[in-house]
Length: 159
Image 1 (spheres, helix red, strand yellow):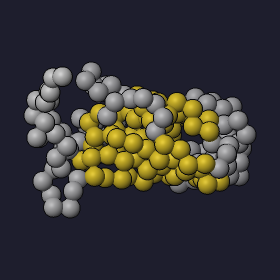
Image 2 (image 1 turned 180 degrees about the vertical axis):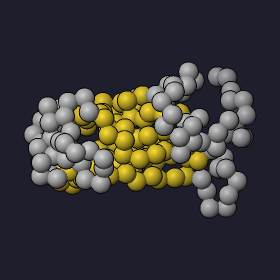
Image 3 (image 1 turned 45 degrees about the horizontal axis):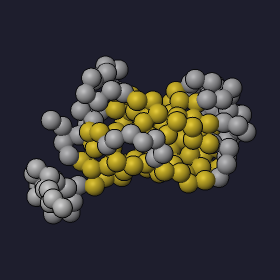
């Protein structure tokens, strides 16, 4: 039986040099009124099919590892959404393309639940600031709801 060692194995998995580590957890939320209008946003109408809401900015240099989404107050029946990222400047990057469903392709918004990242996407490091985007897959929201998302990553810096 052969014994192999990965190149640079001793350097793998190191933190960024700060004594308190470099893991990050960014929190984002979406709350809607009883009419389905997002609170604390520039939206004047209820979210509908294919609408996108930018929940916040994920800083450049963040290596995306995981996500936890908590629906603590249900939205409209049969409502689902995608969670991913899109660059703030709108310009794609070939090495790390924008991905509308990087974290999850069909998050159920009409059931109380805690969900993790379910899409089998590799960890990527964002080369520039990106929005955490929610793309809605339902006709229109028509209920008060609450979604909290925590993006878990490692701050490795930009290359």
